[in-house]
Length: 507
Image 1: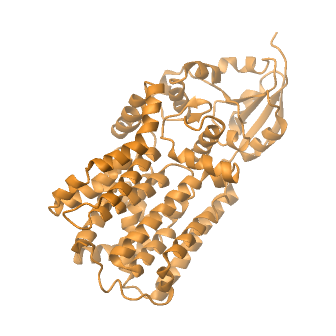
Image 2: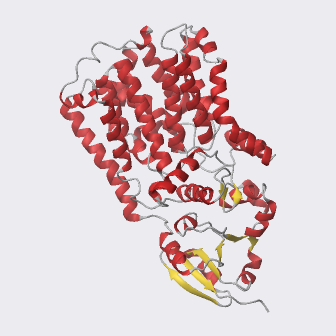
Image 3: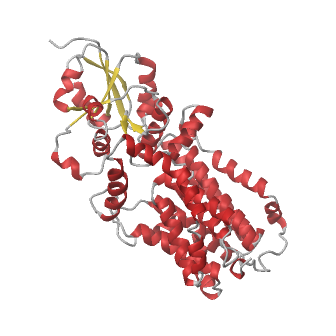
């Protein structure tokens, strides 16, 4: 094994007390899974992300399982891996928030497991356990592992890919082709989870680090045909099949959703260049108190591996700081090296203090999930359950000038919803919202788009199309529906309302 990976003798000393638990990797990783699973289904879906992605997975479960659809329209914002995992969970465990978050939970578990096993090999069980405790009880990690979107899944796969490829280059100048294949498979799955960053980010982390050490032969070795073969066998079939079926897919997914989104400033969540610098410490509290100590120690005790962990943070945070649109979940792949540095600082801390902070972090994680479950912000679950009980199979659901993302999921709708809005507004093209999502999707199925995207001027006519119509509307938009002829309010809460128009024909 290369000296860069040789464990420090002090770090691999026999574990004492609590650290004996780390002697059984299987038990420890099972405990991590239980920790992430325990509250997975406790709270309602948050909007818009969780409602949107859970509904896409449910539609795929009812559809062909291959094409992601949003309200029956091809939805190519993200590749399918997250939806496939959630589809499998819904098939096994039933449809609900628990199943909708399984993809994220698996990503979090994979991040923790790959980090722990790699650190145990390179630095010994004590540091590996400390890093895992820091990671698992950090609010950023815990909540992201229970949030139904693509960020934690791709972050876990990117972390696993980096660790596997590091195993491949342990013994320079050779490259272990077995671990190269594992790393390539992880990159392929990461690409199926969220696109090009699945292989770009591992390359950005490992390539410059290897070149800085003069290990260019291993950089070339990582490009071995076996790696490309494994990558293409896993990642290519879905992309090729979708491109053949929808010729505009490549331009939309690669050019627009990657390069234009990265370069332009017309998307939501515009933040300053330095946005992530305070975000990561804030979301790592209370462990973040050791970050200054970790930084000083890393600078004083520089080794190739310390340099790698530092560069890992710089590469991830720097990459996602460049575009103007920023979301906190983008930098989840940086949690692994941040947790490692904090664990290194904790080696100098009293054990009693470590246990106290771990207990506090655990309470904070559970309190956050509990608070969200108690408040149930923006949830339309009540209206959805009322709709599911009252509607008949042939009824139509209309949403008025808003997208209640979670309602189709909770109501288990199998028929697309009709949306009434101002679709002819020329400003929609420059906006980044639910209308733009549906307009983009309708580009790939124009006839279906015309059927479900209807102008507000037709709203009154929708209420008399000869069959029962249900208007699902945010409470603020309810007066628009109340003014229609022949409608009756059937459900109301603080967030949403249901109005029913009985089967009648327009005169």
